[in-house]
Each structure stands twice: as C-alpha cells, then as structure tokens.
Image (cartoon, rainbow, N blue to C red; front, side, top):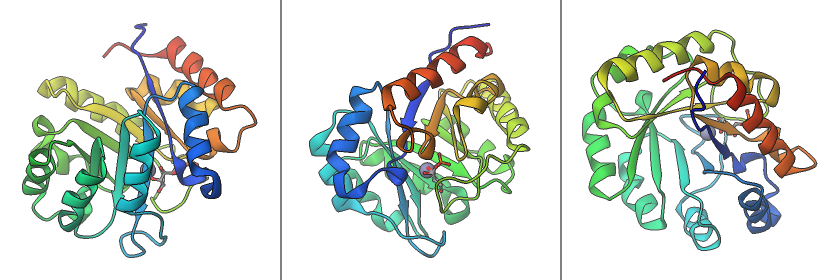
Amino acid sequence: MSARPVKIAPSILSADFARLADEVAAVEAAGADFLHVDVMDGHFVPNLTVGPPIVESLRKVTSLPLDVHLMITNPDSFIQEFAEAGASYLTVHTETCPHLHRTIQLIKEHGVKAGITLNPSTSLTTLEEVIADVDLVLIMSVNPGFGGQTFIPAIFDKITRTRELITRTGSKALLEVDGGVKIDNAAEVVKAGAEVLVAGSAIFNSPNYADTIQAFRSAAHVLSAPL
Ligand code: DX5
Ligand code: ZN
C-alpha cells in the first residue's frame, strides 16, 4: 500500500450560493486542495449554473486552484474568457469536442492546465490519442448535471482501466473522479486508481467541513494502491 497523496476537490455546486465566499473560505480552511467549479449550459447538460464572472470573483477570494469543469457545448468559444477569469484547470467533455487536440492546445496556449472528461457511457478509447497532452483526466461517475446523485458502480472498473492507461503511456495526468463520491466509497475509488476526489453534497451537506475532509483523507490514505 502506498501513501499516494489524494487531493480533495469540494464542488461548489452544493454550496450555499448566497454565501459563496464564506463557503469557499470554509472549505479552504478545512483543508481542501482544489475548488471544483461546475459550469453547465442547459444544452450539454439539463441544468444551468455559473460562468466566467463567478470564476473571476472566486479567484479574488481564494488561493485554491480553480478546477473548472465545463459541461457546455462548443467550449472553445469560452476558453479565453475562463482563462482570463483565473481558471487553473479547464476540463472539457470529449463529447463536446470534435477537434479535441485543438481544444487541448487552445487551453494550454492560454496558460491553463488542460483536462478532459468522459461521461459514464463514453469509451476510454476517446482519450488514448490525447492522454500524453493532458494534465488531468476526469472520470464521471454519474451522468453530469446535478449534485447528489448515486455513484455508478461500473465506473470502478473504468477508473482502474484509466489508471492502467496513464501508467502504460507515462502520462503525467492527474486522475480525478466526480459524482457520488462519499466517505464510504472513497477508499474504493482511490484503490481503483483515483488521486483527486470531487465531492459536492458529501462536503457541503455535512455539519463540519474539516471533519468530512479529514474523513475522506483517512479513508483514501488507508487503501491507496500503488501508482
Ligand atoms: C455533476 C457535477 C459534480 C457534482 C458532484 O454534474 O459535475 O461535480 O457537483 O456532486 P456530488 O458530489 O454531490 O455527486
Ligand atoms: Zn463536476
């Protein structure tokens, strides 16, 4: 068993938006590693959330890396805006990118780390051709659009296969998992190969963010598998 450090990325989708700065300060003080920002357009996913102005405002109130998850069609047209707003990572869905290599290069040209993500039903083969170029791979463990959904069990095997792909190709990409991650499945998610855990409802619906993040870390630490 290795002590691979696992990063915790609270998703603000489940935060109280009326007190967003306080919520962000609270998870930062509680030991969060990244701040996960879910951008939804009502087209690619059946929900609407936030855009570049919120990212710009968040950038002013936290030093956490801003892990921006773009659930939008035609992400290329917004990459410059999100980069200028202060995104640290911009993660696009392969399903929205007919010219994925070009999109990844565009993100990097703006000085932002590039991530790619796959819906639960999208095959891993779509990332094989670009795995060497990306800084982060996000495996969706729910169908994107909403917080508080249940982790799809078949995704454990997909995480394992993604880890194998990263290892086999020597990619430096972080492997992040998003959707339905809770304290009681965190160990299994990490054991499968994840190193960044997104958690929205599990953190923001809990009474004590620091206790919850610590519980995630303890669960992850005990069972983390060798890279
Ligand atoms: C789902 C979003 C997730 C969501 C996770 O479309 O991408 O980041 O906030 O929420 P939980 O952790 O509650 O499943
Ligand atoms: Zn997300």
